[in-house]
Image 1 (cartoon, rainbow, N blue to C red):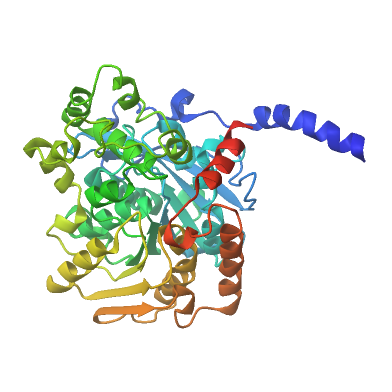
Image 2: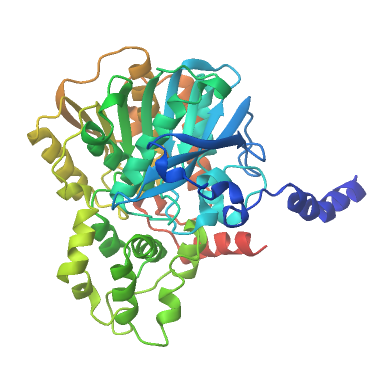
Length: 464
């Protein structure tokens, strides 16, 4: 037995290498075909079965089928582009129900794309996307088809609202045209779900939909937004100099990928010696970005990366771009039912801007907006403690239960206490919560206080 274990240990890296999917940066499937500009947004340009199974080394799952679709879309400036979206069919598939699931990719690098990360054998640096497989799995277990868009587009425009929101909507458009090979109905009911960076994309999709994709409205039953990102500046202020400061680097990398003026402003506001650090902003996925930039002071302190500090963000040309990608400042109000769940203790995405967005939408006359605030959890743990509430809300939409009328804001001790959560689903997520809290990330992980030793454990995993 010991010999077999040793043999497996020696062969596993070779086996993994043989099974690893081609990274998007080397995969021609991700490239726009000739004449793609003439297609309509949401058109399927090409498709294939996923090269590898949708499952993770640490988070195994089984699905009946899965496909990758290359979809025609457009960037923030209305210029044509393409992106890949993944459709997953469960074994007990109900072709009349579809969930669009937006992962928190939170990176400005093509090889971090969800379409790649969700496949068996993908790089360990995509582990945070792989960690969303348990959330996708619980949707599949309900019989729902799931579509997962690479909403950042070909330029990897992380934190860019219009690019991301349009891609989410065009992904749904594409999915509705896929029935000849996926078996999905032409007019299924659709609910959308996203947490953290996924909520940024989804929030913009919900706000843009009435004008950008009005024909989808009869199909859209609602959107669930967790760890709701509405103000990217507030998150930068919260993360600067902390263990999670790498989120700032990835966000600035995404903005720089979409807006050349941003990239130039960043490079011109640092020293020649430190410009190499700025040029690395789009080199990492979420977890390795956090590790490589942990504790970095971008805007504060004597040794800050940017000489102008926060004044850099307040320059008119910079301010216009940042505010233009802040949903808290956007005038449009969603026309579909919305469910928001967020932790009061969130130190990554401060809740004050979520409350502002909630009030703005309520004042704008939104027909249905439910806000479930969790008093005892922050950003990291709310991803799990809020999931049963989100799933219960999603199931209610598919079951035909009417959402709240008008606006409702309730603060609970924990979103585990959300009414009507099925016992099996609550037990499932309580088990995930215990695993996360017991992972040694830090004694105050519920307050988003990750210890340096906890981060070191992640670093060791990535370098092993």
